[in-house]
Image 1 (cartoon, rainbow, N blue to C red):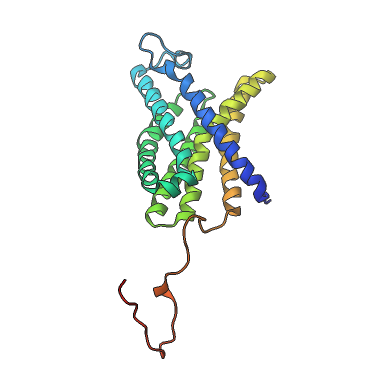
Image 2: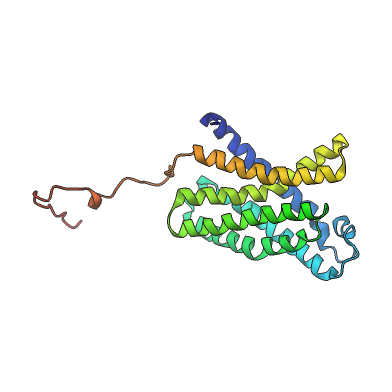
Length: 238
Protein backbone atom coordinates (compact mmCIF):
# COMPACT_ATOMS: atom_id res chain seq x y z
CA UNK A 1 0.00 0.00 0.00
CA UNK A 2 1.41 3.36 -1.08
CA UNK A 3 -0.01 6.71 -0.05
CA UNK A 4 0.01 9.50 -2.65
CA UNK A 5 2.73 12.11 -1.96
CA UNK A 6 0.04 14.79 -1.77
CA UNK A 7 -1.71 12.90 1.02
CA UNK A 8 1.58 12.56 2.94
CA UNK A 9 2.29 16.28 2.57
CA UNK A 10 -1.13 17.10 4.06
CA UNK A 11 -1.06 14.51 6.83
CA UNK A 12 2.45 15.34 8.07
CA UNK A 13 1.72 18.82 9.53
CA UNK A 14 -1.63 17.65 10.89
CA UNK A 15 -0.03 14.73 12.74
CA UNK A 16 2.78 16.90 14.13
CA UNK A 17 0.28 19.54 15.26
CA UNK A 18 -1.88 16.89 16.95
CA UNK A 19 1.16 15.47 18.75
CA UNK A 20 2.22 18.94 19.90
CA UNK A 21 -1.28 19.71 21.20
CA UNK A 22 -1.52 16.32 22.89
CA UNK A 23 1.89 16.75 24.52
CA UNK A 24 0.88 20.17 25.87
CA UNK A 25 -2.41 18.79 27.20
CA UNK A 26 -0.74 15.84 28.92
CA UNK A 27 1.90 18.08 30.48
CA UNK A 28 -0.73 20.52 31.73
CA UNK A 29 -2.72 17.64 33.21
CA UNK A 30 0.35 16.30 35.00
CA UNK A 31 1.02 19.40 37.11
CA UNK A 32 -0.82 17.79 40.02
CA UNK A 33 1.91 15.14 40.31
CA UNK A 34 4.17 17.80 41.83
CA UNK A 35 1.73 18.91 44.54
CA UNK A 36 3.40 18.20 47.87
CA UNK A 37 0.13 18.73 49.77
CA UNK A 38 -2.13 16.27 47.96
CA UNK A 39 -1.65 13.25 45.71
CA UNK A 40 -3.10 13.26 42.20
CA UNK A 41 -5.87 10.67 41.52
CA UNK A 42 -3.47 8.62 39.35
CA UNK A 43 -1.19 8.13 42.35
CA UNK A 44 -4.00 7.69 44.90
CA UNK A 45 -5.41 4.70 43.02
CA UNK A 46 -2.05 2.93 43.35
CA UNK A 47 -1.88 3.25 47.14
CA UNK A 48 -0.78 1.60 49.33
CA UNK A 49 2.72 1.21 47.86
CA UNK A 50 5.71 -0.44 49.47
CA UNK A 51 7.99 2.26 48.07
CA UNK A 52 5.64 5.22 47.85
CA UNK A 53 8.30 7.95 47.73
CA UNK A 54 10.22 6.14 44.99
CA UNK A 55 7.05 5.69 42.93
CA UNK A 56 6.15 9.39 43.19
CA UNK A 57 9.71 10.34 42.26
CA UNK A 58 9.58 8.04 39.21
CA UNK A 59 6.29 9.63 38.10
CA UNK A 60 7.78 13.11 38.39
CA UNK A 61 10.94 12.14 36.48
CA UNK A 62 8.83 10.52 33.77
CA UNK A 63 6.60 13.59 33.41
CA UNK A 64 9.53 16.00 33.19
CA UNK A 65 11.42 13.83 30.69
CA UNK A 66 8.33 13.37 28.49
CA UNK A 67 7.48 17.08 28.63
CA UNK A 68 10.92 17.80 27.15
CA UNK A 69 11.50 14.78 24.90
CA UNK A 70 8.28 14.79 22.85
CA UNK A 71 8.43 18.48 21.84
CA UNK A 72 12.18 17.98 21.33
CA UNK A 73 11.53 15.14 18.89
CA UNK A 74 8.99 17.28 17.04
CA UNK A 75 11.69 19.91 16.58
CA UNK A 76 14.20 17.29 15.45
CA UNK A 77 11.97 16.14 12.56
CA UNK A 78 11.54 19.74 11.41
CA UNK A 79 13.32 20.33 8.10
CA UNK A 80 13.37 24.06 8.89
CA UNK A 81 15.42 23.50 12.04
CA UNK A 82 17.77 21.10 10.26
CA UNK A 83 18.36 23.42 7.30
CA UNK A 84 18.69 26.71 9.16
CA UNK A 85 19.95 25.62 12.59
CA UNK A 86 21.96 22.41 12.08
CA UNK A 87 24.02 22.96 15.24
CA UNK A 88 20.83 23.31 17.30
CA UNK A 89 19.55 20.11 15.68
CA UNK A 90 22.68 18.21 16.73
CA UNK A 91 22.71 19.46 20.32
CA UNK A 92 18.97 19.04 20.74
CA UNK A 93 19.30 15.48 19.48
CA UNK A 94 21.95 14.75 22.09
CA UNK A 95 19.85 16.22 24.89
CA UNK A 96 16.73 14.34 23.79
CA UNK A 97 18.74 11.11 23.56
CA UNK A 98 20.04 11.55 27.11
CA UNK A 99 16.57 12.38 28.42
CA UNK A 100 15.03 9.33 26.77
CA UNK A 101 17.71 6.78 27.60
CA UNK A 102 18.52 7.89 31.14
CA UNK A 103 15.25 9.37 32.44
CA UNK A 104 12.15 8.58 30.39
CA UNK A 105 12.79 4.88 29.81
CA UNK A 106 14.14 3.86 33.25
CA UNK A 107 11.27 5.62 35.03
CA UNK A 108 8.76 4.21 32.54
CA UNK A 109 9.97 0.64 33.00
CA UNK A 110 9.68 1.01 36.78
CA UNK A 111 6.18 2.49 36.56
CA UNK A 112 5.10 -0.30 34.19
CA UNK A 113 5.41 -2.75 37.10
CA UNK A 114 2.39 -1.02 38.68
CA UNK A 115 0.37 -0.56 35.48
CA UNK A 116 -3.39 -0.95 35.53
CA UNK A 117 -4.45 -4.14 33.77
CA UNK A 118 -1.77 -6.43 35.15
CA UNK A 119 0.82 -8.31 33.12
CA UNK A 120 -0.69 -7.50 29.73
CA UNK A 121 -0.40 -3.78 30.40
CA UNK A 122 3.10 -4.13 31.83
CA UNK A 123 4.21 -5.95 28.69
CA UNK A 124 2.63 -3.24 26.55
CA UNK A 125 4.59 -0.50 28.29
CA UNK A 126 7.77 -2.59 28.13
CA UNK A 127 7.18 -3.10 24.40
CA UNK A 128 6.79 0.60 23.63
CA UNK A 129 9.76 1.47 25.84
CA UNK A 130 11.88 -1.25 24.25
CA UNK A 131 11.03 -0.06 20.73
CA UNK A 132 11.83 3.52 21.74
CA UNK A 133 15.14 2.56 23.33
CA UNK A 134 16.32 0.49 20.36
CA UNK A 135 15.26 3.22 17.94
CA UNK A 136 17.06 5.90 19.96
CA UNK A 137 20.31 3.92 20.12
CA UNK A 138 20.11 3.20 16.39
CA UNK A 139 19.32 6.84 15.73
CA UNK A 140 22.49 7.89 17.53
CA UNK A 141 24.60 5.25 15.76
CA UNK A 142 23.35 6.13 12.28
CA UNK A 143 23.78 9.87 12.90
CA UNK A 144 27.40 9.34 13.97
CA UNK A 145 27.95 7.17 10.88
CA UNK A 146 26.35 9.89 8.71
CA UNK A 147 23.71 7.47 7.43
CA UNK A 148 21.12 10.21 7.48
CA UNK A 149 18.20 8.44 5.78
CA UNK A 150 18.43 5.56 8.27
CA UNK A 151 18.81 8.11 11.07
CA UNK A 152 15.57 9.79 10.02
CA UNK A 153 13.75 6.44 10.07
CA UNK A 154 14.89 5.64 13.61
CA UNK A 155 14.06 9.12 14.91
CA UNK A 156 10.56 8.78 13.47
CA UNK A 157 10.21 5.51 15.37
CA UNK A 158 11.21 7.30 18.58
CA UNK A 159 8.66 10.02 17.91
CA UNK A 160 5.98 7.46 17.04
CA UNK A 161 6.41 5.58 20.32
CA UNK A 162 6.32 8.86 22.23
CA UNK A 163 3.14 9.63 20.36
CA UNK A 164 1.61 6.43 21.74
CA UNK A 165 0.81 8.36 24.93
CA UNK A 166 -1.16 10.96 22.95
CA UNK A 167 -3.02 8.43 20.79
CA UNK A 168 -3.74 6.23 23.81
CA UNK A 169 -5.28 9.11 25.77
CA UNK A 170 -7.48 10.03 22.82
CA UNK A 171 -8.65 6.43 22.45
CA UNK A 172 -9.42 6.18 26.16
CA UNK A 173 -11.61 9.29 25.94
CA UNK A 174 -13.43 7.77 22.96
CA UNK A 175 -13.93 4.41 24.70
CA UNK A 176 -15.16 6.16 27.83
CA UNK A 177 -17.68 8.18 25.82
CA UNK A 178 -18.87 4.96 24.17
CA UNK A 179 -19.25 3.22 27.56
CA UNK A 180 -16.75 0.46 26.77
CA UNK A 181 -15.57 -1.97 29.45
CA UNK A 182 -12.68 -0.33 31.30
CA UNK A 183 -10.04 -3.09 31.25
CA UNK A 184 -10.72 -3.92 27.60
CA UNK A 185 -10.53 -0.24 26.63
CA UNK A 186 -7.27 0.21 28.52
CA UNK A 187 -5.51 -2.72 26.86
CA UNK A 188 -6.72 -1.87 23.35
CA UNK A 189 -5.77 1.79 23.84
CA UNK A 190 -2.27 0.67 24.81
CA UNK A 191 -1.42 -2.13 22.40
CA UNK A 192 -3.10 -0.81 19.25
CA UNK A 193 -1.10 2.47 19.21
CA UNK A 194 2.16 0.67 20.06
CA UNK A 195 1.87 -1.69 17.10
CA UNK A 196 0.05 0.73 14.81
CA UNK A 197 2.52 3.60 15.23
CA UNK A 198 5.46 1.32 14.45
CA UNK A 199 3.76 0.01 11.31
CA UNK A 200 2.85 3.52 10.14
CA UNK A 201 6.49 4.64 10.39
CA UNK A 202 7.63 1.63 8.36
CA UNK A 203 4.96 2.33 5.74
CA UNK A 204 5.81 6.02 5.47
CA UNK A 205 9.62 5.73 5.48
CA UNK A 206 9.57 3.11 2.72
CA UNK A 207 7.84 5.66 0.49
CA UNK A 208 10.28 8.50 1.18
CA UNK A 209 13.29 9.04 -1.09
CA UNK A 210 16.55 7.66 0.28
CA UNK A 211 18.52 10.88 -0.16
CA UNK A 212 17.59 13.86 1.95
CA UNK A 213 16.35 16.78 -0.16
CA UNK A 214 18.36 19.40 1.74
CA UNK A 215 21.72 17.65 1.29
CA UNK A 216 23.80 17.72 -1.85
CA UNK A 217 24.58 14.13 -2.81
CA UNK A 218 26.41 14.97 -6.02
CA UNK A 219 29.88 13.34 -6.07
CA UNK A 220 32.77 15.76 -5.50
CA UNK A 221 34.91 16.67 -8.47
CA UNK A 222 37.85 14.71 -7.06
CA UNK A 223 35.77 11.52 -7.13
CA UNK A 224 35.12 11.66 -10.89
CA UNK A 225 36.73 8.86 -12.86
CA UNK A 226 39.24 10.07 -15.43
CA UNK A 227 41.17 8.34 -18.15
CA UNK A 228 44.64 7.60 -16.72
CA UNK A 229 46.16 8.10 -20.19
CA UNK A 230 45.11 11.73 -20.17
CA UNK A 231 47.21 14.39 -18.43
CA UNK A 232 45.94 15.55 -15.06
CA UNK A 233 45.00 19.21 -14.90
CA UNK A 234 45.81 20.76 -11.53
CA UNK A 235 43.44 23.42 -10.32
CA UNK A 236 45.11 26.69 -9.49
CA UNK A 237 44.77 27.94 -5.94
CA UNK A 238 41.95 30.44 -5.59
